[in-house]
Figure 1: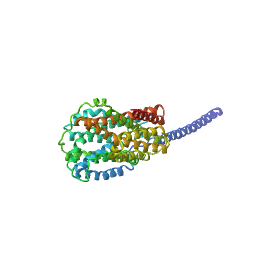
Figure 2: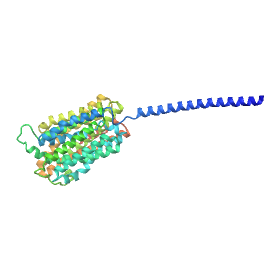
Figure 3: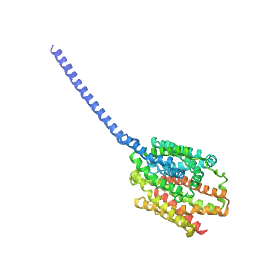
Length: 447
């Protein structure tokens, strides 16, 4: 009996100890599981930020609708020349809008450079086909171009994917080629209707392009800070409104575009090839600087997208002022002197490049002045060469060749700059282009 009693007592004690141990184990597992879930949740929330902020989405849509009201009124109630000018401004804005946003989408300099170069590359490849398609279909070409640009903007606004952005930029490049080519014919008729007016001149198209170049990057940066899709949604809907206005107001131009002729054969003349090579080289450096600058500002100097976007004004304003001031006086001062001064200024500033904010701003000002000097002289020089030495159709082809040279610079510049930044550094990229620019200046002076 005593042994039996001790046996029952041992079993009861063992059962109690086992039960308590299981309770402690369950509580430990529950506590461990709770801690693990909380850690995973906190890590997930801290590392992933939503592309669309639901807290401000309604206010962003109201803001877009409010900004579209004057666009709609001017497009439908304004004169035809104003509609053409608005389309030119929208195309320029579309190019500059995402420049400060690209480093958020593309990781690494190579992907960033390729993304920046996609739009001009699409425009460059499509130009021969666009020139043939647009002739006798100017209005349809402009509508198609606006539709492609709008679709690309909306895709960028609501699809934060690198592949989607490549497709969007390529579509925008083809659309830009269609819009700009058709604008040459439709703009001529629009300004012909008001040729006797004292307050309207064809240069307003150039001014409209400058407005887009100045406002594009800051508007994109500030809008992206408020809501990532906001700038893309606004400009995409604005271009759809412009498309509807084109469909309802513009007619086929009275004079069709001239037929296309071989362009590359013109490069055999040094008086054409040298200025085209000069503007292509300078545009290469400007495009490379623009592609890599925002990456340095946002990643190395830790500026926000909105703050970084405003730094591009230090390049845009000097370029515009240079064109406006030097353009009328170019023939009096001398094309050669202005061209050499501009390229020497750009090359010297590139050799002194640094990653401090002050030096970067001074470099942007110098490059802007150089670009303004070249844009004030090279187109006028080539136009003078075309009038003096060639017939009218060939003269038009010279300007088309200049545009192709610029597009080639916008393609090669970001790709070359991205490769140099990937292999070495931002300073190496700038100094590489500085040597090229100064070498070209010395060779041009020796001739």
